[in-house]
Image (cartoon, rainbow, N blue to C red):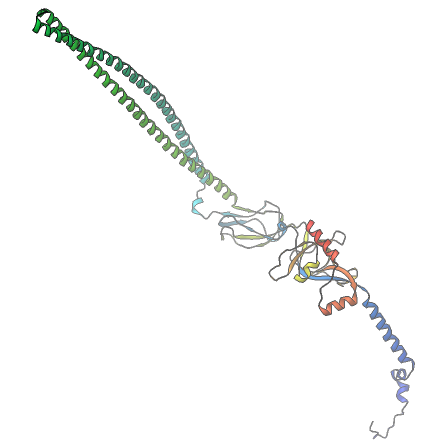
Length: 453
């Protein structure tokens, strides 16, 4: 370098000792490098024209397709004290198997013979109801008898009134006739008296006879008059009696109706009490049935939320979590709102499950290893709390079967497969931040398919 050493190195020594320097000075090395660079560039350019399947990425978790098969908590319908556990965590139970038993903590249900007591009350109330019903029937019969007696008595009294009226007419006729007889006798007596006193044409004996006749007609007139007044009073009395009969029977019938109404009111109250007792018996029977907490369906007991013996629980409190026996699994995928219009029911999906070995090429699904096929069957109409939309994906029947080892709740990533485009187009789209593209015809077909389903 500075040429200050006495030891000199020949200028061509390095070129002879090192292959790299010899190659550098060779005329073929530049050509080989150029060929390699050109080949790599051609390969890269060709890769730009390879087909790339557009997709929409989403993440989520494994769940059950049927809501009834998803994990659920089992609640107690009554408050109580835990007496015994019949299962262990992780144990498989069938529908109706007893999970735990409870004891009563409410003093209203402490009596061990409560159902017997209620049955006795029910029988007593039923007997009272039957007796009251018979009383009502008896009173109704009395009411019918009163109605019949009222009709009969009123008819009899009306007949009496009619008789008195006819008798009054007859007596009034007699009275008028006697009045005429009396007036006639009085005129004759007055004429005879005049003839006797002024002219002396008749004897005193004849005058006395006319006087006697006058006295007889006057007596008859007075008698018929008294008889007429008596008959008139009898008619008035019969009319008063008719009104009295109507009032008496009306009062008796009103009292009987009131008694019937009172009995019917009591009967209604008794029937209400009877229904309440029956309802209480049914409630007690149901409550006794709830002392044993049973499994609502087949599945695994995942977790006990209450532990120990003697611990008290409240009504509607969750006691255990059960994982039902899942028939059909599905994946919940959450995608961005801008991607939802590009997805339709029936779209194919590639799924990667957490914990499952995978080599994924999202744009080349055929080259991916460890992914499984799926199909979109549900697209939510409203966004979730984070603004993303949920998709439900079920296994693709034409693809590999999903692993049995998968557990509900495990994470999953999915790619909803769209159209094939060149790699350069996909790079250009990603650089510019454009969404994937589908044809209008395909979008309409997807919407129609979703609407029909």
